[in-house]
Each structure stands twice: as C-alpha cells, then as structure tokens.
Image (cartoon, rainbow, N blue to C red; front, top):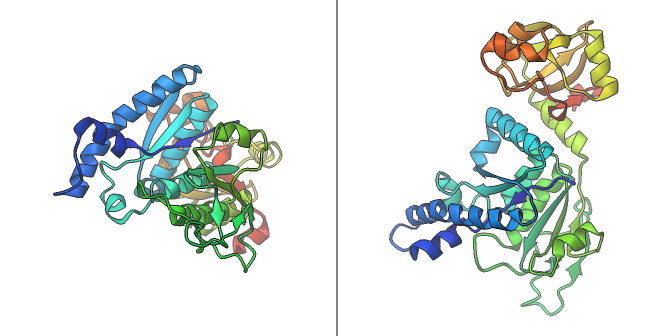
Length: 336
C-alpha cells in the first residue's frame, strides 16, 4: 500500500509561534504564519513518523503547479519516485506564494488540493477527513430529518451533493469544499470516502474494511479518464516512432519507452508535452508525457539509458516516457 498525506495546519502552527492575528493585512500575515508554521508542522511529523521508522518528504504545491504541464510532470515523477523509495510524501498548499489561493480560497483547506493530487498519481482511494460523520442530505444541526448517506453514486441524477451537511468552522474548508473535491476526484477515477478524522484509529479501521463515513464511487475509470486527457492534449507538432521490440514491450509488457527502442523523432515538442507514439509502420499505438524535448530525444534515440547523461549533460530519467505517464491508444480513441 502506498500513501500520500495532504496536510493543513501550517498557519495554525505559525500562529502559536508568532502570536499574531490576521488584522491589518490578513494575506501578508497569513503568509508569514504559514512560512513559520510549516517548519513546526514538519518537525512534528518527523517526530511522529520516526517512531515507526518511516522517512517523510515535504512538497508545497499551488494550483498553478499542477496545471502547468512541465511542473505536472516534475511533481508526478517526484511523488512516484518517493513512493517507490517507501518515503511518505506530505503535501501542503504553498501559502507563501499562493496569494490567489489565500484570497479566493481556491483549494479550500486542502480538500481540492488533495483531489488534484489524487488525480496526479492515479490514486485508487482518496480519504477526506473532517469533523463530521460524513455526508448528510442536509445539515443535521439544523434539520432533524437529515439523513446520513453511506453510499453516493454521482451517476444517479437524483443525488444532490449541493445539500452537503455541517461545515467545519475552523480553517477554509467545510463540507462544500469536500464535496467539490469528491466530484473532481471521482471524475478522475478515484473513489472517495468522507469521514470523521476524530474517530479513534479511523485510518486503520478503513484499511481493515470497516464501513465508515460516506463512500462516493468513481464515475470514470482511471484509465479512461487519463486516456481522454492525454488524447485531448496530444501535441500535433511532433511524434515518436519506435521499433518492433519496443512496441511489443509497451503493448504486451506494460513497460516504459526507453531511448534504445526509438527509431525516429519527428517535429518539435518540449519536455512535459504529451506526444504520440507510432509503430514502425507509422500507426498510432500510444501516447505519453515525454521526459525529454524533441531535440534531446534525437540525441539519445537508439542509445542505452546509461548513456543519457553523457550525451545530454543531464538526466531526467532512464525512460523517454515512463509507463505511468503512458496510455495505449486504439483507433477509436482518437475520436474520444
């Protein structure tokens, strides 16, 4: 099991240190609190996970980071590498630079950020912890007839997620942002559970299969969601052509595309662009996010991966396109 933790609390931790209130210039003060509190927060996480011999890593993100294609690739590759190294990534919103997020509450107490991260790494499950049991048909604090929802199917037209439920009064999130995040995550192929983070051993109980909180099922498969995204964003200025050995490895072995299997680079594309992959007969068979630009790819095509640094002077990975950043494409998919 691989886990990523999306955390909040930097501003609150900073307030304990600086004893400042958000009065004269709330955005500037909030940024200062976040910068100070982030150190305190990570120190606490370090102490906690050291007891279990679990190494951790920090990543501070903004919405711009995950919307920019090159940044998206860099973040995704970093998170995947950390998980493969059995390191626990702890992600927080970068309040120091995210002025728009602070002012407009774009992420909403990291709920929407967690959904974007779930999409980023193709997560099977997103668990959103709050202070309420889960999703109700209306706010049970106001409506005594409010019903608790254990299973929510967004494909059902009768489901009204705008009904929400009780909001958390502290922070910037609440049930509305949790439901917004759930819609985003489920549309990308992740199941979502919204539950009470104050429940004893909540995560361990969920892992053991106990039914807790509200389960919102994915509305699309991860593969279809990713395929649609890649096909719709394919660059039409360049493509990669591969030999039969690489084609067999990709189609039958679910492997990455290595430089050794490339026989031709056509046109122009940048690192982070989504490029099409063609077989030796020029048939489109796959698409993926390129680790290298077209000019760099031409220099390493047909070469072994251990030669990349010597040829380019840098190394973004052994693969031109990692298997986790690639989808197989059939003829019908180009019309998706």
